[in-house]
Length: 456
Image (tube, rainbow, N blue to C red; front, top):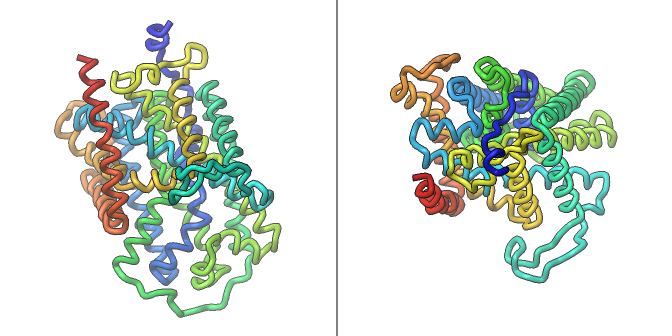
């Protein structure tokens, strides 16, 4: 039965709209509601802030254009796993899958689930109360591990979405389309409220802070994190119908849509609120809507944020489970993770392992620490993936390329430059976490050599 399961392949059940909704739905999480606060503190003026948003958007678009060539040429499950494997060898693909399962994707899922319950505490404050405490020094800061009601709710939400995605990629894709549509509509409501009904603030000429190169780079890092996630659709390449057409369309079209939404939202924010007001509050969208519609407006933003996080969470589970699955199919991970459900044609074991580990991270209270550890190493791999466009043009010139990167080689080099900025900035701001992140990724090497020896 096991061998039969391993021979079963994933099914191409995702069309253009599900593919594009994975891009839009995964990228737009809670960042658009929170990040402008950090950015304006760093750059000081609205003009500089919009320059940062545009630069970050162009860098992300450069990444999408680069990935589009790889996705169309190598439409395999796992996305970066396949691209890194082809360009640099199987070890780099394995390290990417190792990172995604144990820290990056699982940490992201845990963070999104927790963010959902934190927004829900606006309506049900009791969710933030501790109902059980483990009297051992295993919690944040070496204290006791405190478990809140909302953490249990986050786990239930993660498991519910795992169940939906287990029962067919088409079902998960349809959920992604529906929730992303609702999300975009609600964010559109916030934008229209700010542009059409909000009272414009009086003109101000005072800068929140002096603009410096370091401040600009720090704001750019925040913007790039808000744009992060556009690459997730490449992870489900083997389940996209007509991937040579739909993958480039989803990557490029979805990224352009996100750029437009982000710029419009920020125009609305800064029409109603002054830079100092945005810098002084932590929830810019809620503050703007409270000014326009009082408590109803702030509650509407909380609902929009929860739906936004829900879509990002579903997209993360849908795409993230395909990475360890792809490594296992190559004999570079636990064999059972490469199994495909004979009935539902999904990588069921991989979905279960990823989400159960994510649930443990939710309970641990350490998911933010784990995610910060891997930021540095993950972006090294993202930059290497964009560079794979150049490497494969040289190594495999005869490889069929239904889509070729627009502006090659400038566009891939632009994204690589952006990745270097993010890597260097993270290393300077978090040297300890960056070093530990590298060690955590390299800890996978003994496992790689073990699985590699078993393949021989």
